[in-house]
Length: 410
Image 1 (spheres, one colour):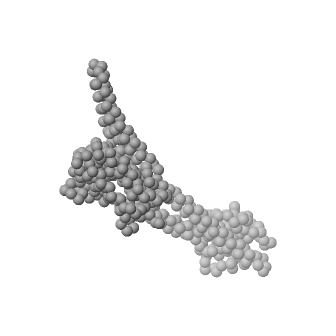
Image 2: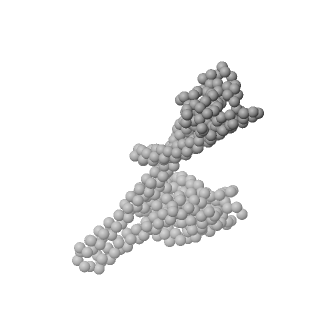
Image 3: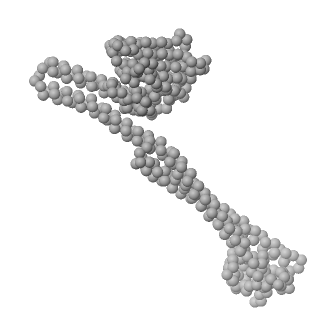
């Protein structure tokens, strides 16, 4: 991958990681806020329960009196605003405060339902009830609620920061892994488009030049015939190229079928070799076909195996010199089926073998193809669970292409 593509992958991965982290942060904030609200509500309800218990206790046997109020808590807790419950008894204009209770504001002397107020700078939950001896008011500090909420928020911030850091790192790693093949596919698509345009431009340029040359000459049948023959040849080349491009496009667009029918490789390859008999004869080649009498069955679409055999035999016929031979062999080896096609051409350099299946790549100097045949063959082999083996031929020159597949279950 080029440095430009690597930068593109990093930028895309960073965007994905940032978006994923933002989504996790939004969800985390919502969850933490809901949890904090629930915690505060539960602690506040507990405070209200303590207030109700104190009111019930003071209204137990007898009625709340100033002496009862003063004896509600020990006297040595004066001015301790963290006491669980503070009490006041309002009788007319007189206010009797229990131990530790600060002065009660006039606006709170008639309170009944529990409310949250600030007394002497401290948050309290306060409630009241009417009694025959006066209006009884009780309060409890909410300092434990604030402390619990502060501890929860601190833990949430620390945990949330760690979680967001892990989420960002994980999303960045996943984003890079996901973006890398996408970027590679994009680069391959761009290269494919550029190569296809180049391959199509060549025959179009030849056709345009032949037509222009024929029109510039004096009208002669032989000139027109020669021009038309060249145009026909280039048109046939364009037709083959377009057919190959359409086949690859359809193959890339549609995934392989989920279940392929059993196909006899021997029968399909024998039929393909028979079609190329005339091609081999026109090039003064011997087409040596060896197929077993037994059935060699694999799971694959028959038309794909026929196309694969045709590509391999056609390539071998193209690259073998006149007077040479092309060997086509099918055999069963245990649990696998083998198809081998050997030519006597100039061979493939070891450095080129890794790229022979790339689209529009030609590994030899001979031949007039567009470099799509082996790309089609590789797509078929990969989709049918096959394996390649590309090695030099048995002689000093040439190449042997071998494909093996798992044998179909009987």
